[in-house]
Length: 143
Image (tube, rainbow, N blue to C red; front, side, top):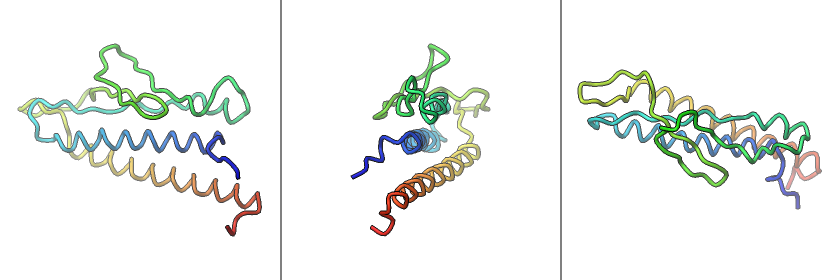
């Protein structure tokens, strides 16, 4: 039996899907608090793929499963723990603010939600296609 989970491309796709899941949670939280007075909209720092090129090219100094999101400011709001690392959640900067102090722009959050959904669909399709290619190469496509 082949252990697909150790392949760098599949690991990178799984990491991307985990990040998109965490991003979905933060966007959903923002939408849920769209009318909460004083609520500050949040976002997750972008995922860092700097280690992916080295791991795919065979360089053993970096690993696709060691993706970590780094904070750029010591005042970041918090971290969301995942099974393979931490995602730093920041307050969104530059958003307009309602008279109640809420900084959620519902239209922008809905656009982010749709984009997140499309990215997740793409990553999951790529994952399935890669597994199917590996199985075909091993002569197990019909099983």
